[in-house]
Image 1 (cartoon, rainbow, N blue to C red):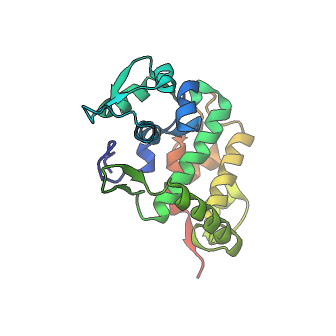
Image 2: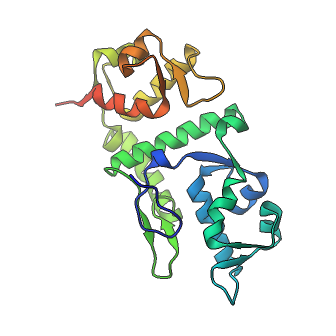
Image 3: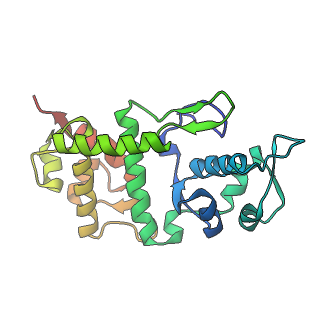
Length: 237
């Protein structure tokens, strides 16, 4: 899957949208400390348009207000240059602290599960005025998703439908049937309980005998878990 930039209509895989920690001044603009980098870029561009900061003589240029100047340390910025400017104001979660690593892993896993539920990736669409809107992150859609997720979990439907678990996976999660999100949670509980997580990079972990049997390797990362779960589960007939 190819990563799309700000303003194009291509699909973007969650595995290619790494979650990052924004500079405190950047957090004031985008309203969050932890987001996918392309979402930070989108929110900065949206903020500029909402605040009327687009140059009247050049629609490609943003005249920064005080809040943006404090973040980017410059007077102007082009819309196409927002992504590069944001890159200098973000850190990997593991560079910002353990608390961010835990949250980033949860956020990235939620995006992976959402991608799988939709059959691939979350759609980025361009509106008639040229604004790029991430349909999965728009407020009404997010509220609706939160409500539907709670209903699905309670009813055991959708991604929360119970799955038959292989004997190999049962050694890790301790149950013959379990929903995919609960399997993922149980695996990470196992990894942390046995202190297998890389202290310098929370996305990486060592494999003990049970994990190696499940994943087929001695070293692995967070993204490999999702594929392995698929290989070790099946729908209950």
